Structure formats: structure tokens, C-alpha cells
Length: 348
Image (cartoon, helix red, strand yellow):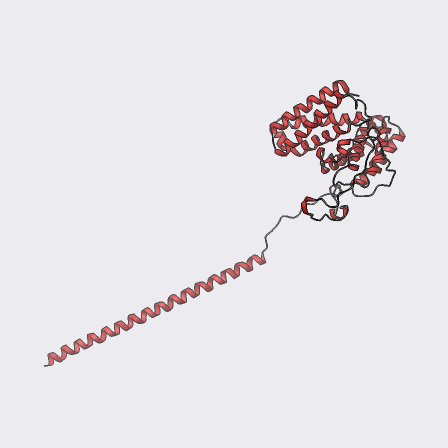
């Protein structure tokens, strides 16, 4: 009997222990779930805190940037403090059908190229190329009028070339079919520059004074000032610029610019902008030297050479825009041949 009681008691004890073990395991699982929930919440809080700290660090430590370059006064003087102040006329407005508003009117020049003056100067030379040539020749001229003795000793000849090219380019400006700088002032200053160029056939005190005054007026114009007003009467192209100095500029463009810049592909790629500029100057001057009143302007052979030279120059320009070295080289070869043939029979 005692054994039976012990046996039942043992069974009861074992059963009690099992229930206790189950309660312990259930409690442990609940604790594990609570711990996992707390851990996830802690990770979210940590991530949010890290993001806040990083944003604060980025805001407090902005990216470092290179300091802007500094330029000396000679460089700064070549640019306007605010280019918008120099814009001519009201701002253009978009129109339907591609209409160009506020088209700048053009003035006529007696004896000017009929094709170009009818609205095709921009086909031959871009506005920025005209402006760049004027700036370059103005700087060259300024250097030639610094010393009266040197001027009268021989520099008057180089000054005559620059003055002639400047007068021709200002003649293009007065008739340009589109927006271009200095169009309002071009006619009057063109006439003063032309007169100075004609006077530089010899080196005298008077020719020096006129060349110096023209150089000063041009410097003021290029820097954005207003040169003294003058007579803007019509002149024929031969009165604006002598043919001889223009032919010299054409020769320089071909021999010192176009030919060496198309000698190899590396040179072509490295100085494409200068090549395009020289080609456009050739195209424009080839138009000028065929105008009525110039020597040989009624000679069909001479006119054909000039047209060949102009067409080849335009092909060089177009090939440069396409980055096509082979096309530019072939066109430059034709241009050089036209120049050589023309100079053999028509140099003056």
C-alpha cells in the first residue's frame, strides 16, 4: 500500500515538473521575442541617428571648391564688366514660323559687293570672325604707332596693311546681314581708318598722326567706348581699302595660316579655331577685291581665280567644322594653287 502511494506521488511529481518546464520554455520564448523587438527598434534608432549625424556633418563641412582665377588689367580690359549693357536694341522675342524679330537694318556702300550686300556676308564670314579680325589688327596697329621714328623708318608699310584690312572689315560691318558689334559706329570710323591707310603710302609726320589717331579711335571702340563722331559718307571699295594690302593679307592667311595648319592631322586638330578664322577672312577679302573699281575687276580670268579661292576657303571652313582633316587638306591645296596662279599674273 505504501508502495502504491509512492508510485502515484512520483507520477504527480513528474507531471508537476513537466508543467513547470513548459512554463519556463514559454516564458523564455516570450523573452526572446521581446528581446528581438527591442533589438530591431534599437537598430532603427541607430540608423536614424547615424543619418542625422551625417547630414549635420555634410551641412557643417561644405564641399571645397577651387578659388576663381585672377587676371591682370590687360586681360580684364578686353572684356565688358557686363556684356548685357552693350546689347543693341530690345531683346528678341520668339515668333511663329521662324521669323526673326528686330532685324538690324543695313546701310549701303557705293560699289560694295552686290551679292554680299544683298544679304550674304554672313555666308562668307561669321560675325565673331569679323570682330576677332578687327581686334587682332587693332592690337597690331597699336604696336606700330608707338614710335614716330620707327614708323617713318619703315613701319608705316605694315601699318598701311593693318589699316586697309581694318577699313575693309569695318566696311563689312556696315553691310552685315545680321547682328554684329559696332554697326552704328562702323561707317564713320571706317572712313577715318581708310583715310589713314591711304596716307600711309609714305612715312611722314602727317601719316603718323593720322595712323596714331585711327589706332586710338579703334582701341576706344574695341573697349566699348564711343569714338568721336565723324562723317559717314558712302565710299567705294577702292576708296575704303587699297587692293595691294588686302592681297598681302590674303597671302599671309594662306602661307602662314591655312597651309601650315593643314600640314598634318595633329596640327589641324590642335588649332582648328584659327584655321576656320583664316579661311573666313580669305572668303570675305576674296569678295572685296572683285568689286567694281578695283584693278582687274573686269578681267574674267582674275574673277575666276578669286571665285576659286573663295570657294576653296569656304570648303576649308566647312571641313574644319566637320573635323574632317582630309577634306580640309584637299581644299587648302586648291586654295594655295589659286593664290599662286593669281599672284603670278595679277600681283600689284
